[in-house]
Image 1 (cartoon, rainbow, N blue to C red):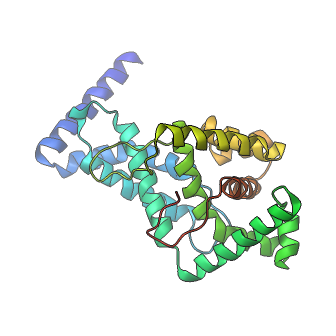
Image 2 (cartoon, helix red, strand yellow):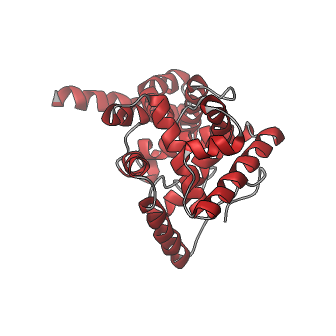
Amino acid sequence: MERSQEAAGRVINKHWRRFKRTGNIQSRNFLLVHYLPLASYVASTIPVFQSRVYSHDDLVNWAVLGLIDALRLFNPDRGIKFETYAISRIRGEIMDNLRRLTSCYRLRKQKIFENLFNQLSEKLSRPPTPQEMARALGVDSKGYLRWLAYALPVSIISLDEFASMEGKFQSVNSPGTRNFPLFTNGEREKVAEDLAKAIQRLPERERYLITLYYYEGLTLTEIAKIMNLTKGRVSQIHAHAIISLRQALGLKTKPEGEKNR
């Protein structure tokens, strides 16, 4: 087993050298196939909600584009593991495409949802439950899922931004790589403290899911098995938890091009 792994490593290194030295397409394709499971894994960590806007296949396609970009830009001489660099590029490609899907109509839906969520939070002195949100929106449970789908993509992006302040999902600082907003040490400590408090105020099931997903690094499929729920239900709980955290940290939906600070 050990010898076979060493032999495989030598083959991979040979293709890396050939691809970087000559741009050989066959070597590029060999590396692409070899690292495809990494792209698939990163895509699996992004919740696919009940939305007509994007599907799991879209996430996988964007992940592959991010992987191709990572192969092109990666510099083995910098001493960074390719997997570490590629995860950042792949997530960046997915998130960029999710942002591009944001239309004026979607932004209006997001703002209506977030404003109502914030109003109910102030009135109840706690985050509203999905049932309370559905009643306030005047819809049934299926209608609430459609509303939640509009709020979800921005929620993922925003959580990644402030989760990175605790060392999660750090971008690799290299040319062309997406970087999260820069904060002073004092700002980072304050946001990390606020985030920890906000997580502790979540209902037990939401807090447990957030811990498994962002701190233990499990996929939603793995979490669904642990919690004995469907993946769709886990996605719903995840989305509601993220919106609660955004509200607690004062993060608002902003037009394309602006940053949450």
